[in-house]
Length: 380
Image (cartoon, rainbow, N blue to C red; front, side):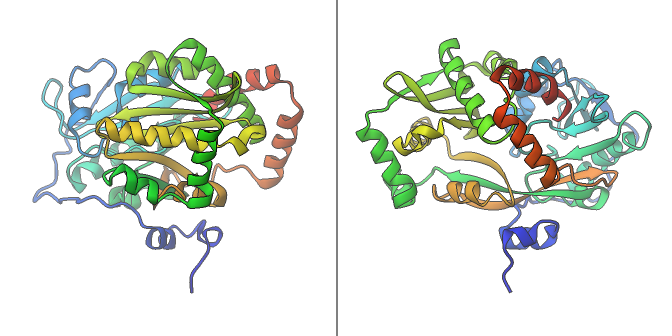
């Protein structure tokens, strides 16, 4: 009997088999990696970091120094990494995390905050297990409330040493087919028709990282988060991304008669473009601005030699977002987060969620911005 996504929540064993969990080839070494020494270092200061991340086959944009810099600048998180490799020697295995300190939500070790996923960058099961075990031992003390990990692919070491606590759905879009084939695979009514409508409406398309474009994008972020019943992320966070990523980041905005109607923010790493933030004014959804921006991103990514677009995670019960991504021809897989020690899910109860949405719907913009500036550093 087939189960719906709603029934799969809390049954991650079924979720893995029904949605599919990306897998890695995990060689098991003939002998255990030496446990004698785990070395911690600051990835923002270590000269080895950029080269290691650039060449590791399972690294993502969330491992990049630019992302870690932005987390530190905007939220005062403390990036750190552990490895069995001695200081000064080439890196072959790393687990990166942030120390998140909060009197409200508790001190914790997160790999990584505000990141859809973050793989342990290792080459064997033994290495992964040793690094996770070391980090887990830190969460046994009084300082840290828990450890959280967000591997993208199947991680047997995390499955054995940690507790699954939150399943999501992940989507990525393969860009290797021709542009015409990619367009042919788009849902005719939900995507192709909207792209053509946007072209008929002569929507203005702009991209870059200027302060003007950022401010227009952020106005749409505020509109979108209010519609979702949430405060907006701090403007300082987006400014930190611009300052850190530079030309590895793009803000795209579609406008009608001088009014921004849709926005998209993407980040780049190796052969992957990451679709990180999208926003829009619902009054103009009929113009097709969202579809126009993502299609431009796809065409530009393909022209620049990228091989895939990371469309990020979706809640398992967000059927609308899941359908939207699959209308673009994206492939679905399971994304499972882990914690130690085992704790209840951090997802907000429905009654509390409804109350927050009601407040957000009537609160002044300034109050919502202040709430975002105050709250986000405590929830990463």
